[in-house]
Image 1 (tube, helix red, strand yellow):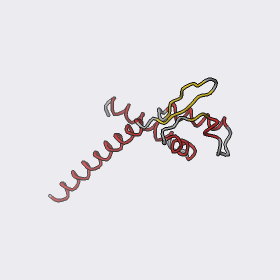
Image 2 (cartoon, helix red, strand yellow):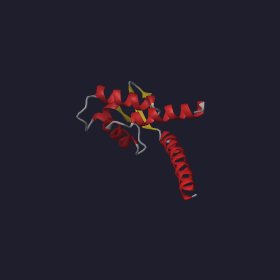
Image 3 (spheres, helix red, strand yellow):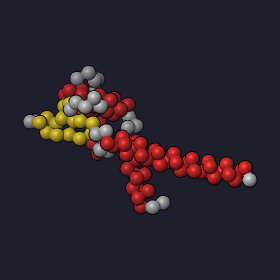
Image 4 (tube, helix red, strand yellow):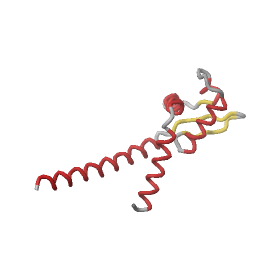
Length: 111
């Protein structure tokens, strides 16, 4: 595996790990409307504490799926849809590899 492939795999793994939690998926779904929200705004209808929401947002931020800006004493979070494009590109690459492998197997079997 090339270094670029290894880096892409690690990058994709971090994204998929961040999305592997229902709470984080829910937070992204809420933020995907394009509006920035504070932790207070995100925890308003949740049974989770603001601390728990903050921990989930930190995971999403480390994966590059959200970014925050300070507004006074609060942090406001927004969704970064470009990271989903990174995931899509990775999945397309893996899909092409499988398609190529299946084509090679088909050619071998049909000889």
